[in-house]
Length: 125
Image 1 (tube, helix red, strand yellow):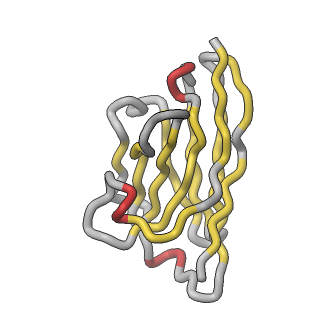
Image 2: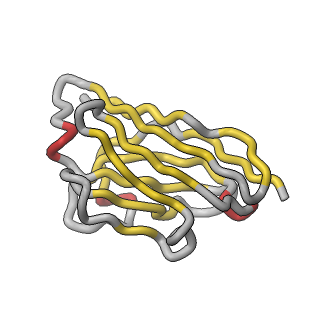
């Protein structure tokens, strides 16, 4: 099994920044062999794609809504993926999840097999 634990969420004013972390562990981890993604889910809405990073740190993709403000990165030596979020807006308020990709696509939740419990991000106006 693989465990993913997100951290770094919190309450921030609009225009502020947060850095989310996702630490991976588990017997069958092989963290550096897998692409990882960040998703978010606001109340009453479907889970949506935020960012993706390939196993070696390439193949970086962002949702249009966060492009230019968020940066995804990873440190395979620490089995951790990060999401630096700058210029936060109230509409970024959501629970943020990291996940390990298993399929060919990267924008839909069904292409991911392991999920963390999520970390709440709240942006006040």
